[in-house]
Image 1 (cartoon, rainbow, N blue to C red):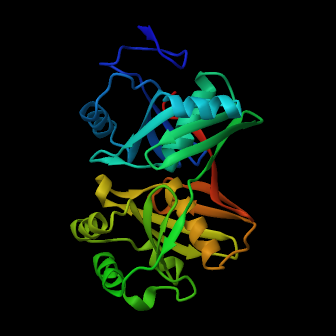
Image 2 (cartoon, rainbow, N blue to C red):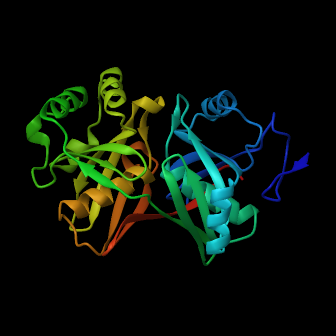
Length: 305
């Protein structure tokens, strides 16, 4: 056994200690599971992809000693800094919210307690704060600068055809858009909860469209009340039918909702996800007036420990 840069004992680089946590839930049977390697030094891309495929979750996070720039960010802010890469069972992704929340909570539990972190990702620098409320650890990530774009009529028609959704099943009050807050998502709003619950789509056809548009997920949304939404995220490009709780999509949705004036500029949204899969989770999305970035919060707990 060796001691890694987090101060946690683990096997050597050829046999890393893979932790399993679920994010956006306090019950191991809920939320979105993520694999976590707290010291991935020495692992190449093929090794990380192989581990992610073996773990089989929608994404796994791999942490490395911070680069000089990330370490400097950490010193100036009094935080702990890491470089992080994310892999689905099929490919690397630029950013993953649930694996970020899970990794931060795992670090807090195993390497120094609650506090502030800086994760340097392919999408940019992501600050994360872990708090402890009566023994429940929660992580709040702050997204990179988001953006919201129009979707073409042809691409929308192809997405609806792949989903087998008639255009009349869309909610006209929440128009389709492409949104980014570290990863790119197509947002489609269902007119009814029943439409959202009935998800049976053409896996290959949707995956082909998503690869062409460089999408991470398609976020399907139903508005339950002014600030409460139910969401689902098909993820065929990651090799899974559906992601149970999607932090990156939640951040993108927060930017979308604010950009279109659907919610106040200063507001807190509650997103329910995973119930239709039997893995209920809750994501909190916080918007601050004058700050374009989006904050996404949730609990995380270990699986099988």
